[in-house]
Figure 1 (cartoon, helix red, strand yellow):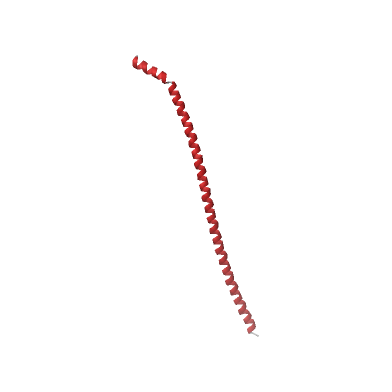
Figure 2: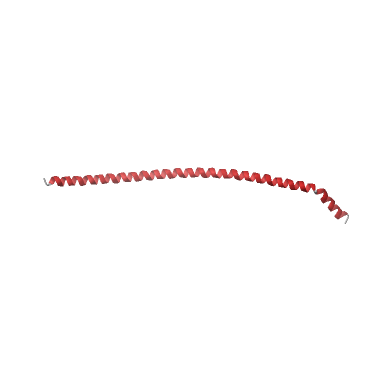
Length: 104
């Protein structure tokens, strides 16, 4: 009869060893799956960030082109105004030069 309790203890110990091995294997599987899920999520976030960066750059380019066009239009308006003003004063300038050169 003394072997029966010893046998039960041995069987319980073997069962515990088997359960521990199973738990270790399951935890390794969970860790591996978590690593795969994390890597996949990271890859998805990197792709999303790349897309957002491309969109932001495209928006910035459009804004820069619009500002450049507005600046060019404004500058051309100023040039046209100066040319018009200069042409308006051309007669007076010619008269002044003629007076100074011809009638010193």
